[in-house]
Length: 394
Image 1 (spheres, helix red, strand yellow):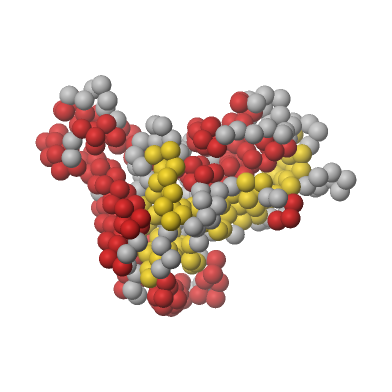
Image 2: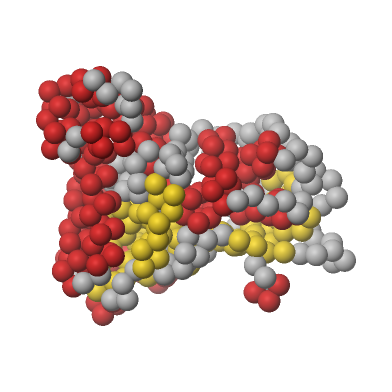
């Protein structure tokens, strides 16, 4: 696949775990994720022509070949190659007449586990093609380019995943603000550990799950439009504008008088989750004993809201959350889009092994995967953002 006489490079793009602030980035509200030590590793070599060839180390995923251009025809929905096509098309629209690459893709992330392996693949592909063409973009511009570009696959998401994958700092969680895009780090306290546990249920970004995800973005837009009209806020009807104009309690009072059923539940999740992000960031910044407890309680409240008001949880996610709490976690919740995927649990560092052992014995062993549990359950170590590795690190 690679020409032995030519240079070969490696790009690493981390996965991410969103600590709190779920399903609100596309509402323009701040979120609080961190990058993972696990992610996508792409070994690549520039080509002399615009052709791009991608081979996945995992044999379940067929090789992908296409021409890097401003308009690239997608494969059928659900094809992994649409994420590399999305990246290639986005950068080609910004920089025409690009050379392609030959690339080998590997990952130590569980696939479709809500840890943004797909966005990591988009970022890695974009960085590989840009590097192959000796082109660079400022981080914020690249984030915005790829967040728009990833909509190629049909998911109407926000910019959280691309922002944390590109802009992360090791040892930190990052508050991400939108419009304008800003990244603010907070050091994770030494005694805090976040555990990630996959539910073994794939969180697919295609088919019925994608339809349900996109349906919620429309419901949020409709709910906020109606509340904004009731408040006479047509000049700034955004969610940030509403939260700046009134307290959460006042907004919920207006929402109860204006909305009903699904729209009320969606609105309630969005505005209360935004408050939880602010409180969680403050708790982490203080980093005292009581703040770990407070952060855990915010995780618990977020999960309840995602389960009941946003309706994106799953029985296996709920079971993992329950078991983690029973084993001594300060709090836990689903992370990512839901409909499957993973949970994140906050534990005191000295209790991490105990909680992981309980999940292994009470969740994974009954499902027949305790012997391979390291692929599904791990301590989330906050990592730096994506980049092409120095030759010494290859």
